[in-house]
Image (cartoon, one colour):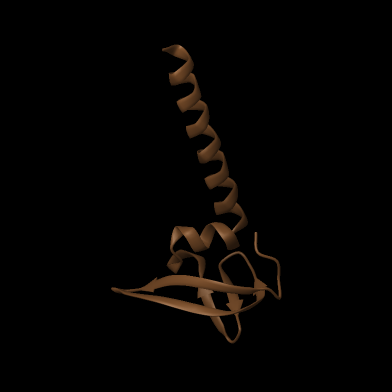
Length: 79
């Protein structure tokens, strides 16, 4: 999770276009983040950026990663 007042790069999509915005993270709430003077919705962010900013998405991605590693480990040890 990126702390407040840190310089970040946010990648997001609006319709068919992809954008990148570099700035300082000032605030976050349940639906969006404030980077410099623009609000960016979590829904518009690509997963690589969203995992750094959205706590719930971060926890889900972490759990998925752990489950995948456990599955790989059990497959290797079963052989």
